[in-house]
Length: 210
Length: 103
Image 1 (cartoon, helix red, strand yellow):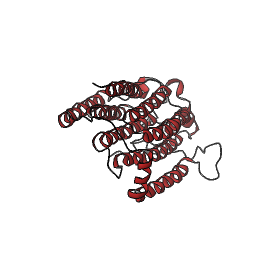
Image 2 (cartoon, chains in turn purple, orange):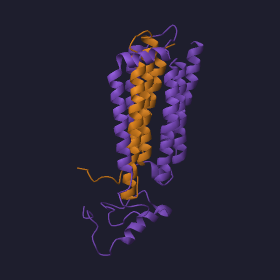
Image 3 (tube, chains in turn orange, brown):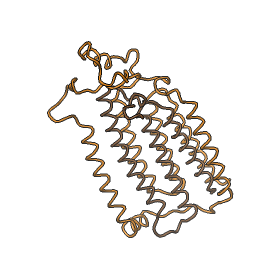
């Protein structure tokens, strides 16, 4: 084991641990912070693999933008905290599926690439990446810019309120199909209770007969 | 440097993401797990590029990783917008509550 491998092992342990904590944490904010740690760890993996530009992109886009976006998402949707509220009943199923997948995939990887070693790790520099983008990958690059523009407009259209409304959301237009939202239990029951109270008494809730 | 290390790390992160998608009920956490799965693939691409084909002219591995980063960012934005809408309509971000289109 070379020094390179040892550094990689350290970074990989950090990243894997943070990823595990991301999906098992009981606190939503801790989960988001562990996700940011995982993403930073992946940037470290890129650095170890000598992909400097990608490491920087990873830091700027993921740790800088996406993690903050998720934190905002968690703050806007005031969700309950606690493992029972965050995890479903199918934790065993999830463990079985992902464990089987991991065993199968890692077996395949070790069988196929078990002995492959690179004497030295070298990667293309920023110059080569720039030339490759504008010599070989121009069309995908432009398509990606169109995709980002479409996603930007789509996200704004989806997330903004209906025109003419500001502040209060109209109770009449809130659709209440199905059961009571079961996450809003205990002390968090205020929004659900509000909705139920504002509905006219005796009028069946749409879809309630399901 | 051995190639199996990065590949195994990517596999582990992907499987952790799969676990999160199945086990979590909060839609934002599900989205975070999907993000984890997307980003773990990048490690594979970079490892193959830098350890096996370091002198390829069209730096395919890195460019694919860059495109995945862009697509994942767009996906996170649109996904969070959908979750906000869901929260506004249902006052809940529990994926078990959203079963309108269930067969």
